[in-house]
Image (tube, rainbow, N blue to C red):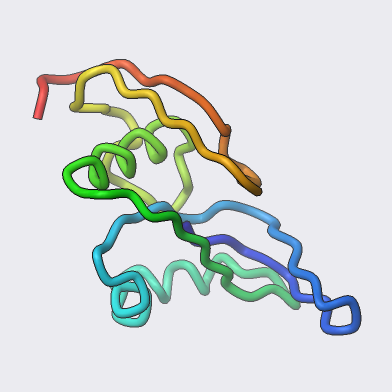
Length: 115
C-alpha cells in the first residue's frame, strides 16, 4: 500500500494522510523502486509530505485475489484495475495490526465473470 504521509523527526512518528495505491508483488522493494506509477504517486503529495509504504505477507495463489478485494473495497485514486469490477468469487479479507484507511474485516461479492 502506498500512502501520502508526514514524518515528525522530533517525535519519530509518521502520520498517514491518504491511501493512494494498492498493489501486489513477490519482490516488494524491487517493485516499488521500478514502479511505473511512482511519478503519479509523487504528484499527489502536498508540501511537507512524502510517500510511505506498508505491506503484508499473503501467499500465492491468494495474493492477486486479496489485492483485487482491497482495491475494489477501498478504491485508491491511483489504481485503475478492480475499481469497478471484482472478478473473483465471494472473498473475505481480515487484517490485523494497524490498518489505517483499510477496513480490518470485509467481504466482497463477484461483480463480473469469474477469473
